[in-house]
Length: 221
Ligand SMILES: C[S@@+](CC[C@H](N)C(=O)[O-])C[C@H]1O[C@@H](n2cnc3c(N)ncnc32)[C@H](O)[C@@H]1O
Ligand SMILES: Nc1nc2[nH]cc(C(=O)O)c2c(=O)[nH]1
Ligand code: SF4
Ligand SMILES: [Mg+2]
Image (cartoon, rainbow, N blue to C red; front, side, top):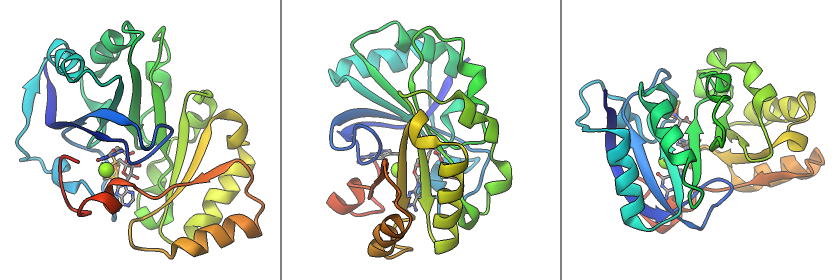
């Protein structure tokens, strides 16, 4: 069994709880969703070239970088058959801080028996993604303070839905909560205005830092 790795690199994390810090990124092939705005759709192409790597090989690469933050992304990383094995291996290394970007459709409960689980950054796919029907709402019950929920918003209707869910599930009490723009699709100021108008205390607005530093279409950064 192997993990299907489409790219691996060191950069600063442009998103999430450790935004701005160095991280080693491992991007895996394939996804079960097809979000209209996906910025890494190339990684989901059935014919994408990948490096078949064992969990031990991925771990060795991570250690070789000497960077202690790790972000597993994709594609949808939790669909990789050997992800359980990789997470087990990573969880035994107390020097590492491991984050997984996941799309909200995969049940997080499948990974809840890990002794030292990674930090899940769970996207909730809002209406403008076209994928909202695929969301597993029960994932909200499995979040801990190590985790994050992210609402990537491309419209006022998206912001409104994010607000409803944050309130209904008391998400700011359970995990870190982020609202981010679909890159280029929504006025940044309108997100701040929306947060002000709705007293969205405890919610973090975040813009993808790597798309400001590098060309937004650049890979491997
Ligand atoms: C490419 S996805 C891979 C991980 C997983 N499939 C998911 O959707 O969370 C990584 C993150 O990039 C975000 N993303 C993808 N395209 C984007 C875009 N055009 N603008 C802003 N964020 C985007 C996703 O919402 C997700 O939070
Ligand atoms: N620098 C940088 N930070 C990131 N944070 C999450 C990413 C992702 O694609 O999941 C990402 C990425 O692709 N690049
Ligand atoms: S779930 Fe993530 S990787 Fe899959 S299409 Fe949506 S943004 Fe892209
Ligand atoms: Mg990205």
